Length: 221
Image (cartoon, rainbow, N blue to C red; front, side, top):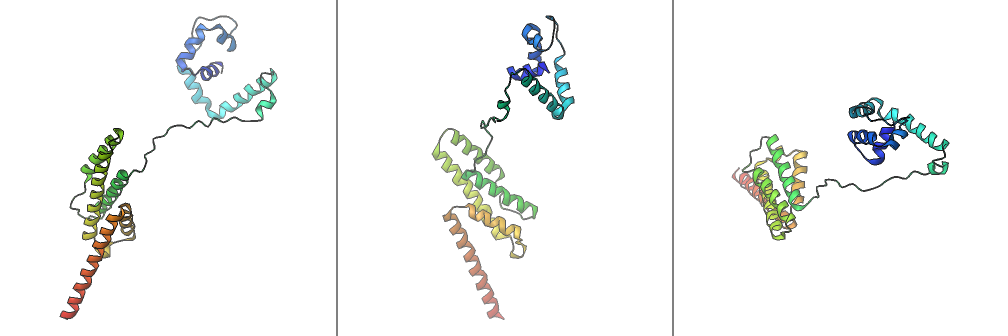
């Protein structure tokens, strides 16, 4: 118990706290030793085994006993236990921010993955090219090379548009399930406004061609 308290107070490892315990008579007195000892009290691995054995449920009674002893010796005042101080220090996290390049590449990969599941052959998936360009965007961002970022991002957008048009040409209307329609709508929404207008113009042209073919077939009959 005393060794673990010293470990957390001075932020030491198991090996370090045991080694310093041999050299410090005050630490030995705190742990209940009556005479100065020159040998290690325990093996450092015993502390780890003891923590694994008692778990968190076993540590709660020891914490309660420590608080009771502190109150009895008047080291801690009862008023000090009425308020809990919580450390809210912000910890850095590995957050991937949704840049345009990542959005384009993620959408392209989702479309390619869905096409492979449905057995739809694509002219080109741009798997290797997309991975290489995404890494190039990262290098340009670290070097603050804005021209390089714009160049590589534009290329990734082009890849997404090509995959969208390829799927739109080859996917029959009867095979466009709700999942396909939702994915295609998300892909079109990912593109900028100019690219979306081009996609819409292409769909309108295809609809006109289909109506024209249907009219010719009706006249032939």
